[in-house]
Length: 258
Image 1 (cartoon, rainbow, N blue to C red):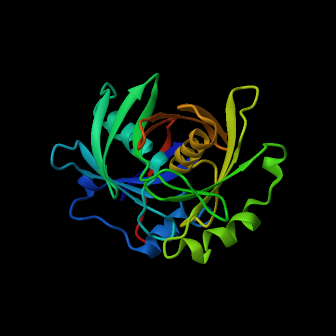
Image 2: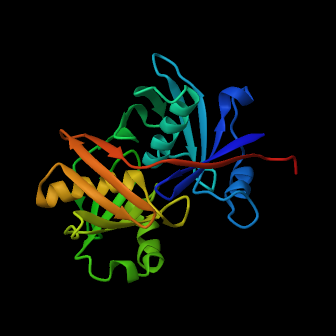
C-alpha cells in the first residue's frame, strides 16, 4: 500500500490517497499506532487520508491521531491541500474541501498553502488559561517568552490535558510568548492530545494562540516561530482565521504486508 510523507512545519503525516486504494479506507487504531511509531514504523504525528469530494468540494480529508482517534488538524489541512494540488499538476490556486468539522477553503499564496479554520467561540478565561476551540479544543497559556524553550512542557501540560474541567474531550496545551521577538514572531510550543506529547508545530493551536493574542492585546495578523518552522495567522472577522506556512513532501514508500 502506497503512502506519502508530508511535513508541515515539522508536523508530519503519513498520507494515503483513499481514492486510489478504493472502498471506504479507514485503518484500524492498531495499524495507525504501528505506522506512526518513530522507531518501528514510518513515524508521524498522525495519518491523513485523502478522499473524494462531495457537494461541490474538490476533495475530503480525514485526520487520525497516532492513537487512532479522529480530529481536525490545521497543519494536516494545509498538507492535504498541498498534496492534492501537486497531484492536480501543481498549478491550481484554490480548492474547497471537507474535514470532520465541515467545509474549508485552501489558497496557494506566496508559494505556500493557506487554509481557513473556524473559531467556534471567543476565547474564554479559565482557572488554567484561555480556552478556545479552533476545530479542536485548545488551552493557551501566555508567557513573557524568557525561558519558554526550557519549560518542561510535558510536566506542565499533561495534568491540564486530562483535567476534569475539560472532560470528556480534553485539551491541547499551548505555550505562547505574549510579545513578539526581534523578528516579529511569537514563540509557540504545543502539547497535543492524541499524540500525547509535544509536536514540532500545531496549526489549530497556532490559530488558537492568535485568537487569544487578539483578544488580549489586539491586532489581526500574527507570525509565529514553532520548533518545526514558521507559521502565519490572519484573523478575519470574529470566527475565521487563515493559517499559512510551508509543506514539504520528503519521501514516499510502500507499506508491505506484515
